Length: 80
Image 1 (cartoon, rainbow, N blue to C red):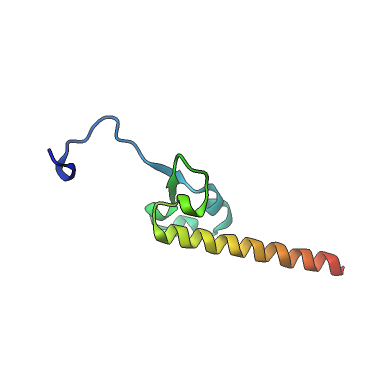
Image 2: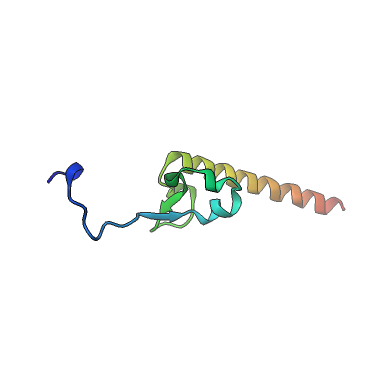
């Protein structure tokens, strides 16, 4: 059989898991599509590990937001 019409095999498994960083940092993580939440199992929870481009972009946006929030928190604590 060709690759598109092959019979399912018992060893077919899910190729990834939910990104722990996005799950922790994104309040709208549950509304994402299933593939946008997944990262490859072999890689750590980084933007490049996401299975889709949309997941990659949203992960990068969260990283920037976390960095911005930390910088603002640092400025406030230095002033007080």
